[in-house]
Length: 106
Image (cartoon, rainbow, N blue to C red; front, side):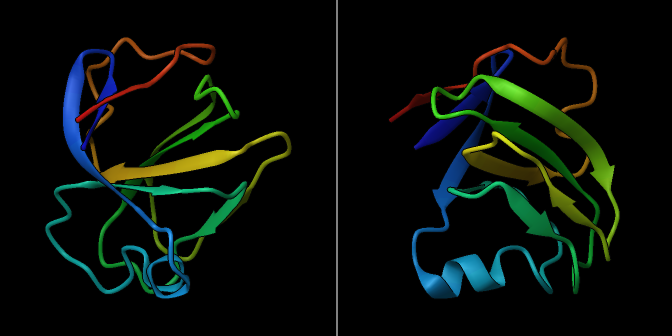
């Protein structure tokens, strides 16, 4: 499956098990996929690389955009339903705004 942000596509995996949610991108290098979580909070402890983050509502309307988030940060936001983690700089150069919707394709 792919996630589409402003016409830019990337493969996505969903953290839908306890182990996937716990591990996320911890200890990983050369991140080349998006990781989706059903949560309103994340942390970047034990991360080897910065990441870009989109947080959305239930309808995947973007509520928050974070670029190049460094390690050892905690982000908690009210009204967020899904959180998507991207490789660092994935969102650079995109005309992305709060209120935009993200899409998916198989």
